[in-house]
Amino acid sequence: MSESAYPIAIFFAAIFTNNILLSNYLGMCSFLSVSRELKTSFGLGVAVIFVMTSTSMLNWIVYYKILEPLGIEYLRFIVFIIVIAAFVQLVEMIIERVSEVLYAALGIFLPLITVNCAILGVSLFMVIRDYTFIESITFGLGSGIGWFLAILAMAGIRQKLKRARIPHGLEGAGITLIITGMMALAFMGFSGMLQIG
Amino acid sequence: MISALMISVGAVSGISAFLAILMVIADATIANYGEVKITINGDKEYEVKGGKPLLGTLMEQEIFIPSACGGRGSCGLCKVTVKEGAGQYLPTELPWISEEEQAENVRLSCQIKVKNDLSLEIPEELFNVKEFQAKIAKVRELTHDIKEVTMELVDPPEINMEPGQFVQLRIPEYELTDEPVYRAYSVASNPSDTKHVELEIRLVPNGIATTYVHNYMREGDEIIFNGPYGDFYLRETEREIIFIAGGSGMAPIKSILLSMAEKGINRRARYFFGARSKKDLFLVEEMRRLEKELPNFEFIPALSDPEEEDQWEGETGLITDVVARNMESGENTEAYLCGSPGMIDACIKVLSDKGVPDELTYFDKFG
Image (cartoon, rainbow over all chains, first blue to last red; front, side, top):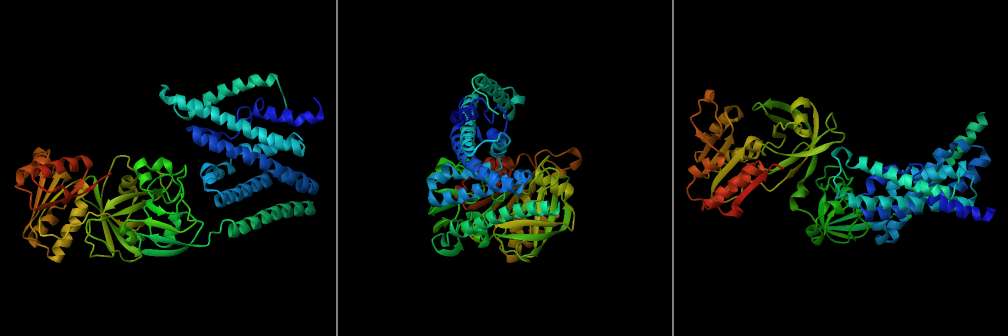
């Protein structure tokens, strides 16, 4: 694969073969609690795409322009979290001011994903895997879309589950985790086609 | 080594400080909605600082909307009617708001933010609602499962209420609950004693609040409650009165009777009190004493299931049958009921059959 095609490969790998939710099991808490409704899942998914893409960009700059030159890369965990939290807060404020419709559909979910581990995970993977700036953006965008697809698929399945007779002990999180496992297996099928990381 | 430490501390502080300043600026510019005006019930106007949730903004103006979760959107209690200015419904409100309520613009005040001028409707009684700090002055056993709790007010030191109203008691976190919960209890004392509030609380097996009151609360403890709430109070008419209560439904009726005795309201009044057996009866002497003070008042306890050793000679049977037996025409009567929903619904039917106008039958159902 040529150098210039690499970001595109990362993009698709992040969506399918290395789906951050289904292969790394990150971002589970909001995935389990919000996937009950298709509509809210959609809103949260879009918010995750947006935040993942922009924070991977911001954190790339912070890491390579501040932390690395100063030789304090080991502080990335704490710094990334601060940057993500501040950014999300800021975006929420702006959305609330600018558009009421956008706020009702998207902004309301932003505080929920400040502490989503998948967001931090993307920033940390991008460092471990030595991605360039462009690669980091495509990785963030791809991971976001991957998470979006996963929660949408789960919400779709869970809407059907409402009519299914689930053994009592498996209701709620139990059956959801089992289904997530099956989905992860299905997504593993893609991994023969493309591999990163 | 030292310099490496300095650099890392400096870098993290620098980044945090930069972001903090950014947030402060954003807070003062983007999130600054300036002074906005809240109009309540069309006549009261408040100038407030915009940008914060409505529930907290109202609290700062000392208007307390009942809320059990403290503004996290998980109890659905803090509903207010917003006539103008609240914008569209948020996904976090919808689980709590029915379609009928949506048509009436009922909103969850902890979720909507004050961004522009608002026009609200709030029940008038809520303006009198305050939060009180109190001390448990006395805990007394009334029966095997009902306790009388007397609270002495600390701050504010006095409460103004109508006899028959209720307060919300704050139960702190303990073994059965991770977060404070609020439960409503009717006040049993005479409101003319503005420094004390007395409650009668019956133990509900595994009930969070009642278990706390019965097994954990000690004299001298500090407690928080808010109130007063409710429209269950004696109307000023000349009609005959029928009181019906069961168990801890005694509380508001006792409050009303004490107040009647003090004010010398000597209307014809009968009080049917239902209990299972003699061990569930309480405050009988107090009621007999009130009978002497109020010549036209009669206390009629009824046991549904008296035990042999009770040697009971009074009324027996279900409270509904006892009321039906003892009542003639109810056309000139108004009724006050307090107890379980099952008891109240059954009694309303009996009263209605006897001719008591439905709109003059007031009740306080235990949720």
